[in-house]
Image 1 (cartoon, one colour):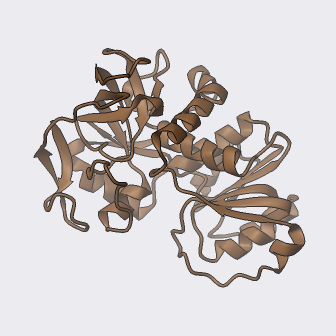
Image 2: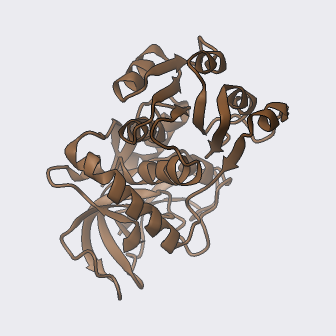
Length: 324
C-alpha cells in the first residue's frame, strides 16, 4: 500500500513523503478499509511536531479518520463485509491507501452519500458526543457555546446541539463570513471574536450551560464568566496555551465544572460505545441531511503537506480532506 510518512519514518518535524508500506492485516474484530478519503485534524499537526505521539500499538502514519470500502475482515468481525461502504475513527494510519480499524469504530455510509463526503463525519461527531453530551451532559432546553464554530468539530457541534434541542446555540468565529456560516448551521448568535467580547455577548444573552472550548489560554477565565450557574466547561485542546492564571471565585460561586478529555487513546470498547451513541442519536439526521458535511477543500494524498499548511494557517471552514 501507499502511505504518507515522514522521511525518518515517524520522527517529528520531518517532511512527509509518499512511501510504499506493508498493507495492514486486520486483527481480531477489525476490518480492512480501502481508503477513499482521510480527514485532517489539528491533532495531526501536533503529532507531526512531536507533541502528540500515537498510542501504543497504533500506526505512526498520520490520520484519525477515513472513509472507504471494506475489502477484508479479521477474526471475530461480523458487522461489516467486503464491499460495505464505511467511515471510521482511527488511532492512526489514515493518510494511506488502506487502513485497519476495529469495526466498533466504524459507521455505515448512508445510501446516496459519496464516500469522500463521508470522511467529514466520524472524528468530529464522536468527539462532540463524547464531550458535549456524554461528559458535559448537554440537555434539551440548555444553552450551548462552541468556540471554533466553523472548525471541523465546530460545524458538527452546532448542528448536533440544535438537533438535540438546545435552547440557544452560540458560536465564536474569526470573520464575518465564518459567523454567517455558523448562523446557517444553527447558531442563534455568532460572535466575531476579533471584533467583539464573546464573554460579554454570551452573558447578555443569558449565559451558557455547556461550553466546548479548544482555545484555552485567556478563554479559560472568559468561559468561567460566560457560564451559567451549574455550567459545565469542557476543553478538547489548548491552542492558545495550557498555562493560565485563573480566578476560581466564580467557579465556586457558580458551582461550575471544568473538564478536559481526549479521544484518541481510549480503548476500543469505549470508542465502540461512543460510536453506538452517535449512530443511534445523530446518524439518522446525517442520513436525512439535517446534519450536513461542510467540506472546505480536498487534496490528493501526495499533497498532504499542502493540506496541513492550509489547516495550520487557520483560514478554512469545515473539513479538509485527502483523497486517495
